[in-house]
Amino acid sequence: MLIDKSLHRNATAPANQNSAADPGAAGGNNGNSSISDMFTTLLAAQIQNQDPLAPMEAGQFVTQFAQLSQVEAMQSMASINAAAAAMQESMLVVTLGSQVGSQVMVATDSVALGDQPVKGGFVLNDSASDTKLVLTGPDGVEHPIDLGPQEAGEVDFDIDPEKLGLPPGNYSMRVDTNTGETVRTEIQGELQSVRLGADGQVVLSVAGVGDVTAADISRFLGRPDSHVPFLS
Image 1 (cartoon, rainbow, N blue to C red):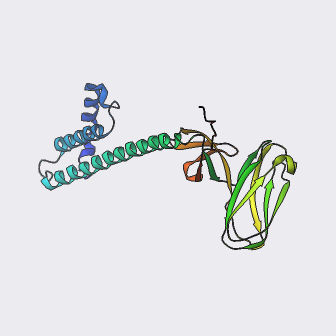
Image 2 (cartoon, helix red, strand yellow; image 1 turned 135 degrees about the horizontal axis):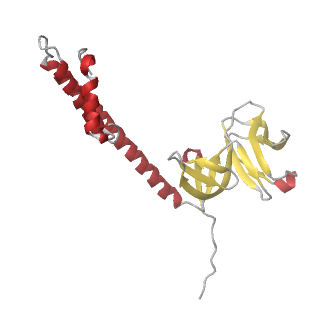
Image 3 (cartoon, helix red, strand yellow; image 1 turned 180 degrees about the vertical axis):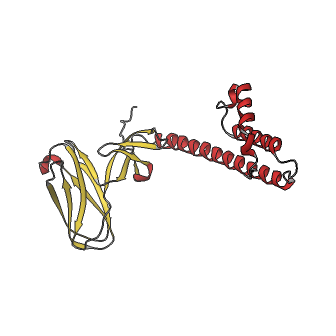
């Protein structure tokens, strides 16, 4: 805003008097009303303390009002965008919540192993004559799983902790190929829950992976087929 320099001479006194007369003016209001109140107080102080021999031009007042309108419009837009984003996140929770119990593929570089086999996969852009899935345990020891030669495209793998002699725990995961290609690994797991985190973001809990974001889900595979016997 364009504030006349003469404001600094006596602006403090009127402001203090207003604060004493209205206890709520110091910090009770928020949003557009507080900005309007502050602008009105400053404008009144400008008018009261302007030089009578060199009063402010009308154009300056118009400019200040225009600046106030712009600030209020930006604040209103920010509030609307925040409300829309919160609504979208809530709708996403409801939508994804209907998928709880489904099998999903999660892009991740780690896996939590228990006593059950885990399925996963990745995509190769180029054929490789030597492909290995390397698991690194909490102790830093690497456990390579030889996948042999693979054609370009989707490659599936199974991790059987009992067969491989891997104790339960969290393992980092990577794919090594003779081509040196960087590969994104995915793990298949059951979607167990969907919730809003403390930061307002959607958090999905996937068996064998843990908490992930919606962006980490690469595929929904549906629920396992349930065979219900026919009752005559």
